[in-house]
Image (cartoon, rainbow, N blue to C red; front, side, top):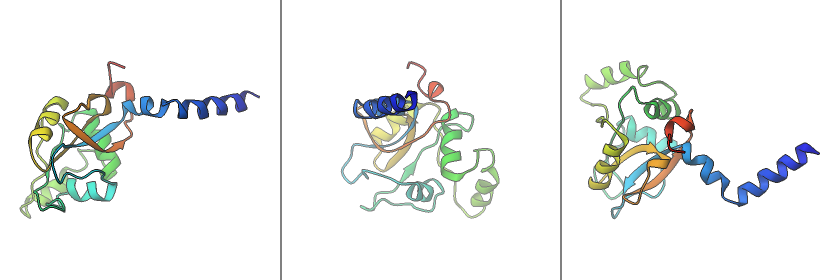
Amino acid sequence: MRLALALLLLLWLSFAGAPARAAEGGIAVVVGKLPGAPTALGRAELLGIYGRKRELWDDRTPIVAINLPASHPLRRDFSLWLFRRTPQDLQSYWNDQYFHGVLPPPVLASEEAVLRFVAATPGAVGYVSLCAVDKRVDVVAVLPASEPAAACPSH
């Protein structure tokens, strides 16, 4: 009986908008509200972008991928989801890429800096807490965060 009630409650909550609230602790991959910006990005596309294998959007605009600092919890979650490795584990990859003339994505110090940069820079893509997203950017992917409460401290 309890299981049936729990399932019924979950079903009701799913239609009442609960998944959107539950996802607030996630990671939002964002782009600026500009013509030609993508509307959705999958893991394979993001892997190409953040691995610096894909350099242009479909409309030939240069891609500018932005990272948070390696010590930031969202960067750790993003790297684990995308590369299946921590930012520290990727150091040897980027050292090797450097000798081939490929630099890692630039790092900005805060989520607000990422939002401002992405909103103002054609071709930019970054990631922030889902709860940090505002009208300046469009969300093209939502990823899980390991610690939703840490990602959205005001919730």
